[in-house]
Image (cartoon, rainbow, N blue to C red; front, side, top):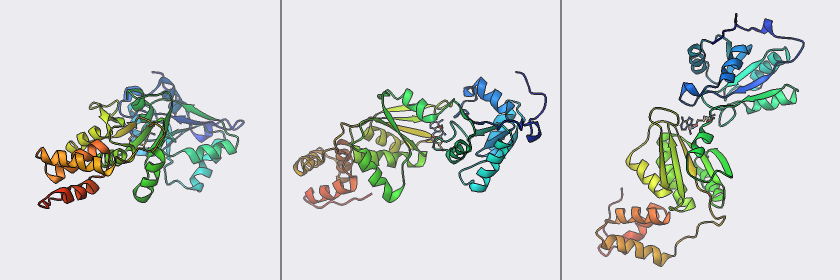
Length: 300
Ligand code: SAM
């Protein structure tokens, strides 16, 4: 591997032309996924602007690169952006990297990119790993058209978002943290119907990479029973374009009664019918309690 003779500095910059902003993708777990071009750009740039200089410092040391590192993260304000734009206009080539994957994809960078474009600076992508694309490619779900949702909103905005997505026909890509994965799968099953197909891609490109494929209800059950570790992407099959129909009351009561007659407790019956219908477990538990002749109660 050829090494540049010395670290590039602002003094080396070619002031007769503005620098270029390069958006350099880095591995999402497997260091072999860095591209030959990414290594060259990181080595030849005057500055690497990193989401976390400690994380990127390790990566650069691994590849024996000693380019000057500065910080550019989600909380960087206008002043930081102006500083980077000034460095670019002075002729410094800047490589922007995030902790992992492609910058600007659920990661910092898009404001800097906008500012650079507005200032006439050339912005170049240096493509490579991206968890969303890696996950959908191996999901087994349709890839012809898809929508990237990033992280779903929390709390009150979540219901609104899921309601809007319930009529989405394209395959959906959702980023999620491991400790929220099972609950989010349950929310998705309630919003889209329990039988919608999904894939959960976990620890992609890492030692414990796994793909769990099944209905939303099956994936939710799997991760409720076995809370995951590591990073995950949820891929959900698109719908028919219609909001899922709510099963009628009699059908729901029949399903609950059948489950209880088969020896299931009210809680178990509620869970089973929730998996079949996508209705909320609490709501079904309340109905099951009313159907129970002796009013058995066992909330949990
Ligand atoms: N910019 C990154 C990219 O290109 O994929 C995404 C950054 S976002 C802050 C981090 C999220 O990406 C994680 O919460 C997880 O949903 C997903 N992710 C990142 N690496 C992953 C991996 N190796 N396996 C599965 N999901 C991953």
